[in-house]
Amino acid sequence: MAYQDFREFLAALEKEGQLLTVNEEVKPESDLGAAARAASNLGDKSPALLFNNIYGYHNARIAMNVIGSWPNHAMMLGMPKDTPVKEQFFEFAKRYDQFPMPVKREETAPFHENEIITEDINLFDILPLFRINQGDGGYYLDKACVISRDLEDPDNFGKQNVGIYRMQVKGKDRLGIQPVPQHDIAIHLRQAEERGINLPVTIALGCEPVITTAASTPLLYDQSEYEMAGAIQGEPYRIVKSKLSDLDVPWGAEVVLEGEIIAGEREYEGPFGEFTGHYSGGRSMPIIKIKRVYHRNNPIFEHLYLGMPWTECDYMIGINTCVPLYQQLKEAYPNEIVAVNAMYTHGLIAIVSTKTRYGGFAKAVGMRALTTPHGLGYCKMVIVVDEDVDPFNLPQVMWALSTKMHPKHDAVIIPDLSVLPLDPGSNPSGITHKMILDATTPVAPETRGHYSQPLDSPLTTKEWEQKLMDLMNK
Ligand SMILES: Cc1cc2nc3c(=O)[nH]c(=O)nc-3n(C[C@H](O)[C@H](O)[C@H](O)COP(=O)(O)O)c2cc1C
Ligand SMILES: [Mn+2]
Image 1 (cartoon, rainbow, N blue to C red):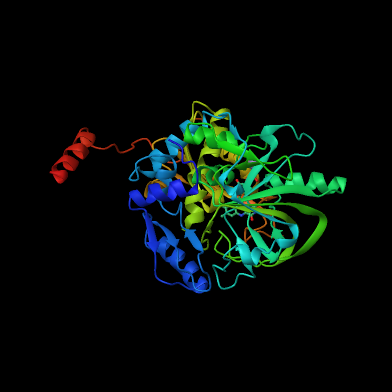
Image 2: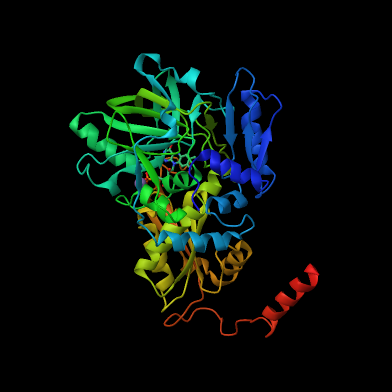
């Protein structure tokens, strides 16, 4: 079953006890950021938060932490809320294989209820803005889908991009945007600027969770996020055309902004507390001019807390970072790759579980991970483990590192590769050494170590696991 819009998902969360409505009056700063940070601090089953009594506003409603726990992530997939993480990973991978699912086009959408045109636009009036971290340099939209097209191949639906990119509200109709060079919108902007023309963009706020998931998934450049959203939800994804451009927008959005990135213009943007747990600093970034605003009656403004992991951002880009890496590695090595855990900091570190056909194989798997499209900007460290090690079970990964890895032979460092500039350790920003840690058991023709007597569990352990669980549940 697909959620048609943001409100339907919030209602589903509420029914399952995964939405907490806060009726007491809260201050935009620091209550909202603090509450969402606190929700993450309380563990991995936290509810989404809906605030409907915000100091300074008559009728603003703000939702946070919407995909901010494993139960909420499971519900995004339409699975029972207690589904284990690894099961969510394999289910996501199964649906990823259903790509592409054709889209469903609509003529009108609920957000057409209200239209605001050029001279009347004042984003500070329209949106209940607030800062989430005390060092943020301004007000941000940090969970919006940004849609743009490939200018050289505009009719190619797959090359239309939907991505989550943070935006700083810089004026009543001006936003700053940070297109990381490795991401698709950077390609579109470059095409526009090479021609000296502005890049049309449409921004959708308050979407149902499947499109925010697809928009933050490292898909291939020509894979449509809408066709992936359909595959994930198991039915066609609903879209509607923008009014000012040829861009397709999620039908269920609460608020839609239409505008363009101004060619050649840059302005100081930031700092913003990032998913790396560090501030981005202030840098020169492109500007979006907003020309039209649409919103539903009494719209719900969605925002997300991010900072030192784990936060909602990490749930959003956890499993959906693992799956493309897993599928792309499997394309190269279909009989060997078992699972991939790239849930930490969007895959700056990745753990790959694989069979090893012969000595040296695991290191090659690590190198392949570095050269996947997502690996180019992430995968600073790749840990490769044997097939019997569950990469989602970190104690097992630590066991593999501590017993299988030989520091002289199994740490491979490759100098000066690309990484996203936000990696606070990169130097210069955007360049880093990368490392493969081969924590697999040496196989022939390698002869290192004395691994010939691996320890196995007693014969009836599996039966006893079941038996003990049954006894405990009695
Ligand atoms: C909350 C959040 C904020 C993000 N902010 C940015 C950003 O400002 N710039 C950026 O390039 N990527 C940002 N990302 C990451 C991209 O959305 C993600 O890497 C996505 O896979 C990129 O897709 P693309 O290859 O289609 O560009 C953000 C992700 C999330 C979840
Ligand atoms: Mn994309």
